[in-house]
Length: 134
Image (tube, rainbow, N blue to C red; front, top):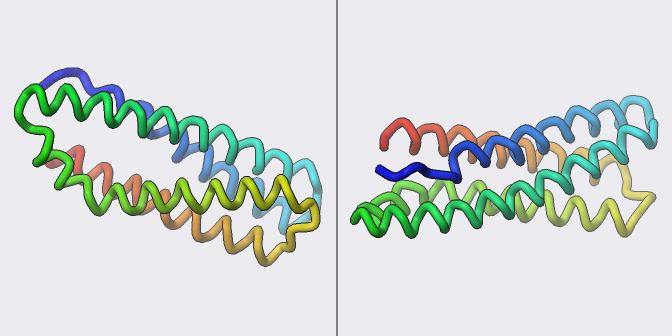
């Protein structure tokens, strides 16, 4: 099997987004705008990392197809992919809303935080199951 670039890179958006949840909790408790900005910055970095992860996933797929195992590998990634793309969408909407609305309420922040954290944690968990079954 060729070296795969996607698996080591996916940990960065996961870690950045889960760290953003910590700063969201700190912001929700204290109201400190530093924590809100830190969370937004981490979400943005996570989005950049997610784009890189997705691109590298397709790069890896091409090398797996050349070895004859690409379609089966994609089939095992199907459920994982739904959670991963869902988390990207949630964090993208969260990032845009935070940029456009400085007065975004605590309820909206908490909703984005919980939904995004659950989706990315599930994607990471399912991705690990795929990795173990390779």
